[in-house]
Image (cartoon, rainbow, N blue to C red; front, side):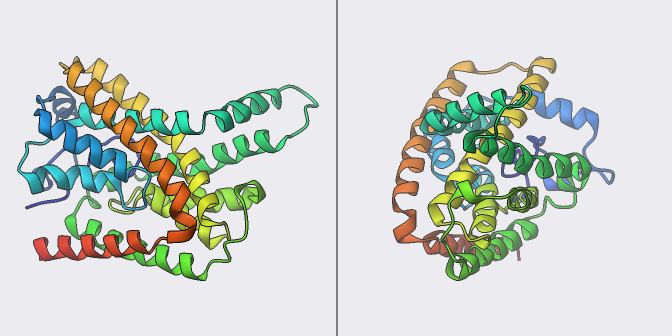
Length: 309
């Protein structure tokens, strides 16, 4: 059983073509491999749609790596691979959820950010937040371009997934326990945004979890749990949007035969599940802490090691 096929690298990298670990040529995936992966969009069973949509909606914004779960679920349950287009639909569903949940904040940020493009406009807190989100997004984009080949080949092993699941889970626990947890996201500096952005770039490594890495960085910098989560969720918007747009373009360019009804149902279910997940996560995280997710990551990492060793 291999766990090394990644369509997504925790939303920090572009959606990657689905190639089995044993099929990788010495030089990495070829152009024909990529074209074939876009052209293959198998039909998805109804129960599989429901399960994968719930998995995506529940894990996207929790610090446990949604991408790893989208890979694990079909293998554990014995389903065929759901295809890249379906994964894109699920992620766009969760994008809609975070945009709807933070619609008022996003509206203020966009309004004030655009106003700062005019000369002599004051930098309001919302405009400043917009610039910080952009700044925090840059490291992952640059790292994705620089290390795309490495991520698609050398880092696609099950051992890497297990190691990052356990290692970054331990980091999350350490900074959750040791962090001051006194700051709000409004107090973030340019340097803080860059540090969180660099942690987001680390989520290029399979199994790391984009939300887990950015929340860990926020806690390390002294943010409260809720503030770290809120900034992480806001940071996810440009990353999911840009990578989703890129893959949609590639799917259209490849002339992929897409099952639009299945995609719509999957996107709708992941949207509703993610919306509830965001609400309850932010409501209870200050009191519960990160320990349930740390324990889950340790269990998952050990389970993967038990399968591949």
